Length: 314
Ligand SMILES: NC(=O)c1ccc[n+]([C@@H]2O[C@H](COP(=O)([O-])OP(=O)(O)OC[C@H]3O[C@@H](n4cnc5c(N)ncnc54)[C@H](O)[C@@H]3O)[C@@H](O)[C@H]2O)c1
Image (cartoon, rainbow, N blue to C red; front, top):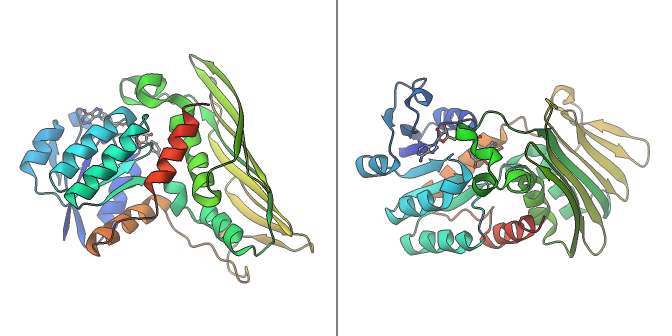
């Protein structure tokens, strides 16, 4: 049975905790947050207000880091130095140099380290990687990805609105799409971008150019209560594949239309998207790697460095 501790019981922990709870051969034994009330809904666990005390008193196999971004790297290194495997929320850090610091700690202590870049485990996004790799609908010609919403009002101490702690839209929001682009297509040859940055608004438009295609992207925190939505549209030679308003569709050049949305599944021919929770998928993948003594290679250090290097210039 893997013993797991989680630090940072804020917004995203609500997606991680149920994933650990659902796993049969792992037990989430300890939680840590500087706000005790955040841990109250989980009375069956040991609660810590201090991270170092949790590391000292618990015998953990895995630490799951859901802390504000600026705390990720130091906490991850401290845990790995004690021989604990670490899964850490994105972004790994605001500084590229931390990537090597983290991976060298993992190598030195022979532990697993993975940044939870969730789109790599998201069925609708995995579909695009598969279609690109297999060329099922021919070559990719262009793509569009967006992630639009309002400036997050919920974060502890408003850390998300503080550029030095969150990196704002590039590092907090756009990183999802850029990480997917680098994972799927490699490093872009050229980047063109525009940005409007004001105290309560941050809006980016970036085009990533590759030798044979380009991906246009948008990411924003608007000042008003603009509803969050993530979208994509990829144009292949023989089909357009879109993910909009929760609907994943394939429009083939022969007129065929396939709705891959969960509700519409049943008769989609050769393509079926699994009904699954991407956060649970990434956590399951990491736990399986720990159990099997395999280093998680789905998220690679070079890719993380490439992404951070691009983000800091946006
Ligand atoms: N993968 C995703 O889709 C996704 C979505 C949201 C957030 N995130 C990432 O998850 C991380 C956390 O974001 P969030 O929205 O949950 O933030 P949050 O502010 O809601 O939660 C952070 C929690 O950490 C606690 N905390 C702060 N300092 C601490 C310390 N020193 N020791 C212990 N606890 C401490 C706070 O009390 C708070 O409960 C960020 O890096 C963010 O980018 C990822």
